[in-house]
Length: 130
Image (tube, rainbow, N blue to C red; front, side, top):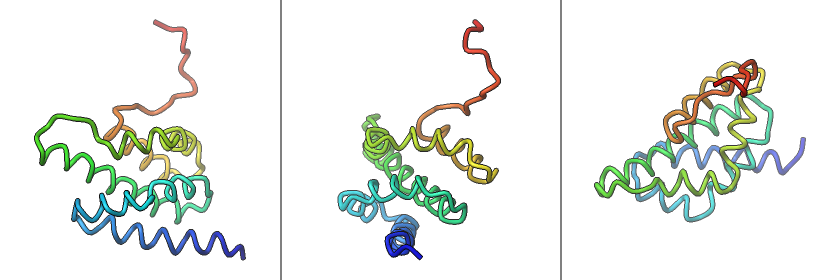
């Protein structure tokens, strides 16, 4: 077994636990330590169980960013969602829509809809239709 994969799995459990803390300050501190890079790397894996945990942690972290906007009543931008997008995280989410596990597809669509206002990609839709 690849030791790098095992390390990534252990890191994911730590990220997941921190994301469940519901403490926005803690989540922001974890983001400062570079957790989004680790999550992006994990989204390249194909193991369904790992991806589902990563997607749940990602959703929790993105919600913390949204909660901070609501708390500050600044009507600003979710900086965490923006950072994730800049790291090609949204592209990785789009790619996961073709994963054979339907739960992963559903979770990805929900995350994209909630945090980016994006709808699912329908490969059968003709883009030239008005």
